[in-house]
Image (cartoon, rainbow, N blue to C red; front, side):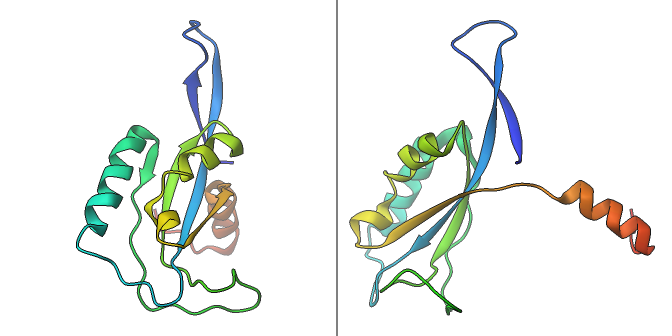
Length: 128
């Protein structure tokens, strides 16, 4: 889990970890953005504030391998900080893709950066 500490209930010295969640956006078949699309996304991302770790980018060319959400393709992503899966789901409910008939997938991420760096060190491939 990629974690950040946040204060709990304004109590000094009491913190809980905030995890990072991946939101993937899945537009419906035939989706075409309107003139208001950018503004809707910008407004939602502004509402997310500091919880928005990586604004992400839209995807245009996409395909699926294996099982996928019916009638959608991968359309983009954002990384969001939240205190738990329920909190992340609550934040995702404001996503403009939902009102366009699309979907959002939410997944808690973990970081293997340190472990990967250690593995690279054993292979002699790390260039710091």
